[in-house]
Amino acid sequence: MDRERDGGAVTAPAVEVRDLVKRYPKSKVNAVDGVSFTVTPGEVFGLLGPNGAGKTTTVGILTTRVRPSGGVALVAGVDVGADPVRARRLVAVVPQRNNLDRSLSIRQNLLFHAAYHGVPAAERGHRADALLEEFGLADRSGEKPDMFSGGQAQRIMVARALMHAPKVLFMDEPTTGLDPAARLFVWDRVRDLRARGVTIVLTTHDMDEAAELADRVGIMDRGRLLALDTPDGLTRGLPGQTTLEVALAPADGTSPDDLLAALGALDGVERVERVEAAHAGSPAFAGGWPGMNGPPAGPPPRGGGTEGDGRPRELRARLYLSGDAPLMLAPVATMLAARDAQLTDVSIGTPSLEDVFISLTGRSLR
Amino acid sequence: MSATITPATAAEPAAVSQVRVFLAVLRRDVYVTARELPVFLAQVILQPLFLLFVFGKVLTDLGFARGGYTEVLFPGVVALTAVITALQGTALPLVIDFSFTKEIEDRLLAPLPVGMVAVEKIVFAAMRALLAAVVMFPIGIWVLGSIPWRASGLPLLVTILVLGSLVGAALGLILGTAVPPNRINVMFALILTPLLFTGASQYPWASLDRLRWFQVVTAFNPLTYVSEGLRAALEPAVPHMRPWISVLVLAATLVAFTAVGVRLFLRRAID
Image 1 (cartoon, rainbow over the protein chains, first blue to last red):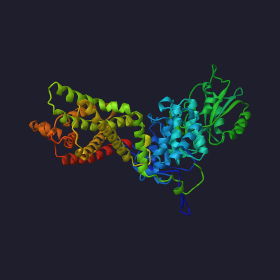
Image 2: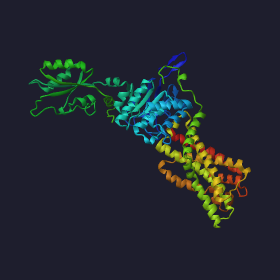
Image 3: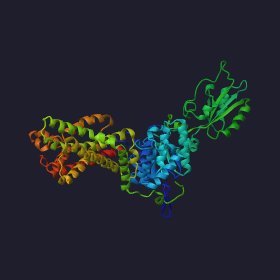
Image 4: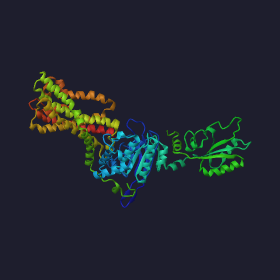
């Protein structure tokens, strides 16, 4: 779309997808249903969504393994549907499943991959050795893929993908099924590659991974792209999803309901919710877990909060805000002071991509 | 890998000749098979060796078969070896690749039309089959003492063997891509066994006119034309089909099987 023409040279987006549709034979619904997005060169782009959202199919189309039913998909300006052979020179894939050649050593895996892509023989050896060294595999380069764990196989596949210096690297669920250490290693590799200017498109159903790695995140569900922005932009866009949780000790004779009503009447507070003591753990709250921090449309938790005689010693309330939470601290404190209520605890909750997904679909990611 | 902005044409990796990519894919298969050559030979030679020994040596020595039977049998066994080795060289690896290991994916992503990966499979399986067929000649001499041979039949021999191996490999491509993995055992029982025994390798086709229905059945098996073609090349005294018929039928079958096989391969390789 945003192509700059400069003396005949064309700087195409790394990836450009327009109205992409894929319907598998014998399926009643579209696996990918009118998806459009653009990835700029050097960007790490994340496709986030639950299983079956259409992420893998979208990547499959871009890597020429799936034929689109409609729309256009371009990689570095090359139409993958019309010219798949040329497109394959530009892309590399790190698949979800280990598909290393088990008949070859890992070094030979790298060498043959480069040969399939026409890398000159002299160049192949240099590149393979450099990558094996970088990925901490040099001392095991002669071993067969069966000798490696899932995380190591993932590493080898990333190294293999880089052998032909692709313009865009596609990683399909790169850390699914990996242990935490292997996951962190893959995350580090992605950051390294980004620093080297490699464009990366990755799919994930892990919101932390998307938030951690991606410059921009596209949220997919049921074949559609529901939202597309930076992780911050996506969460900022959530109405009433910045929250402030306050604990306070009301003055004698003050009704908790009055206090809650007063909090709700403050400018910038969209909704007030009374929080049960058991729910008041601020770390979990700040993490934005779906069960703890419901969508704006969801019913507020009911009951609780009072003890024995019906007069609470401590009142906890969660304020859903339309603006930034820190800016609300002063008005809240002023209002409480005016009513002789004592502020005993404050925590700020930031919404996560999980909350964004819930607000878009009404369902949890997991 | 630098982030500097360069014109797309210059930044794109140089176009590689597709012949070179094809040869790289072929080289991988040659490399892997060459490393386990003894295992490969043992695997493909044992069955024809026993066929030759039991039918050509034991039955003749015991007097149940006439001495001339080896002239009928040997070309047939060479034909059988070529066709079956080729068929297994594509069918089994493809079932395993597409359904389990997915190893072939890296080659499907090479800058080569995907159909050419299927053609490479046919070419490579045919190469293996030709090797197995050639090895049958010294084995035949060893088991039978002497084998039918005439130098003037060499061009026809080579033509038939090459065509027969390619046809077997193309048939294997069809089976390997059309049969679901859980049916692979059934495939071998239901397809391989009839193929082995209706291919005129243990009897000359022309003499089947006393068993007309069976003669018609065997005419549908491409192996028949390989067996008959090899008899025409090695031992013209045995009644055989006209060589040009064998060549023509095999060539036509090759085109048809390859077209169907490549189409099925594409269906498996690209969603």
